[in-house]
Length: 375
Image (cartoon, rainbow, N blue to C red):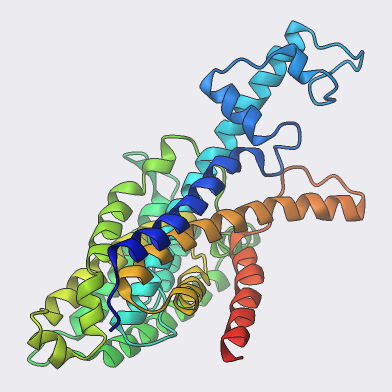
């Protein structure tokens, strides 16, 4: 494996982190609700930096009565509206950031861990188990909350973790399951959960079926500032552990025997990585539903651009996943505004399901990069 200098590491990782930071700073001014003000106005309003009437002169979004003058009440109304836009957009961006980082980082880890280019964060049946749990909660009409967590999210989390627990219980015994066998067990459990999901859907009414289908599309619905922190206890420890496992995963890629000869405890590495990925991904599925393609496409794009050294692959995949999902979230909102302009209809604040957008953007991008790589 080629040596990785400290300067190269910080330049590449720092550059990707800077791009992500720019996207986060721009996010309050992009979306269906932000046509009246830009990102500077949103940040200034939120931080309490004064926006004078002279700055707003000539802006239709601030001149409510159209008389060409900006009164104090109009200025205050603009500031309040800009702050409301920030409170609506920024938490949603932070949620997209957490979800994108988690899915891309777990996807990159699973692709190395299972030595399979098609492995995703949902490989062990996490998405199918979580979806089955959520669909059961919708079918039974569970609407209670426990410690601020809805029964829907709690059921999805329990279903996701439960499926992985079943997969790992199969591997207990005198001989540990190989990566391929574990992968096969996860796929099999995922297919079983998919069949049970169809059964639950078949015995549900129209309203419940619509709610189930909508949940399965994935969602980054507007969340409050406090709600956006609910994922952090699950995902942040996983981020730290997985990124710090980069050196060990580099050795693991060379084979179990060679990795153990170089001091890597292969069994412990597999168990810790799978546990971290399972808990983090289960939390994402419980909060936002299954959002596909991020964990599959983003690590491959990063590998094509920066190589497969896990010391770079893991942190850059995390940054790229966060940036990718933020851009997809923008596209989900702006596309409906564009559709309204084309059709001449007012679509309000409607947005495309985020799972649809990740596929529309991610797949062509990946295929284009793959074709460039071939040439």
